[in-house]
Image (cartoon, rainbow, N blue to C red):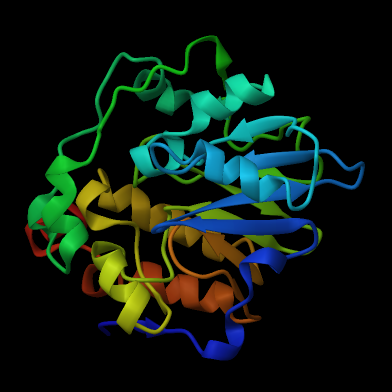
Length: 272
């Protein structure tokens, strides 16, 4: 199996992913807003460098209030870069998993990218991407490290540790309607060629971005875990949101065939 296709009728709009969930695509990465029953809201991920104003302008379309928090699925540059500017403007905390802390406290860089991952422009350009360390200073707060956790600012949502792409990568799940926000645990577009895929490729299930994924065995385990949640709506960091009753089966297939559809040739010995 070289790909897992997605029917067009399963794609859902970014501005209506699920009840109270809407998204914004900034270049090749998505950020999401979760609007809670009491009118408060939470920002999930914080996009590319110099996109704080674009994200703020987008939020003004649905609220005049600041969020109650910013939650990061992980700390890669395309998910964190506007976080400090936004947190300062809104006077809120930024939450992340404890295993991401060294990369968010200015202490450690992420591993060098695998520019030989192949597949498109993003892999070739990956040595040019910022790897940190980012210093979020006193804005940073950490989730509990004891397995999955919850956050008071996001009632009804669970923080699910899904390592592999990074050590402290998390996904966010709402059992009530089985909505799942997955960051880079997997993508619905070919992550090594975001620019080409945006123009020419139909939506497909793909693994995490290969050039920045640090542990393929853990990534496979995270996909297996996500397949067991029974999600019927998924909002990825890259690609289009989807709604489908057979999402768990497709995620199971993705984990089963991860070597064929995602793991680079120069990493397969470490992914078995």
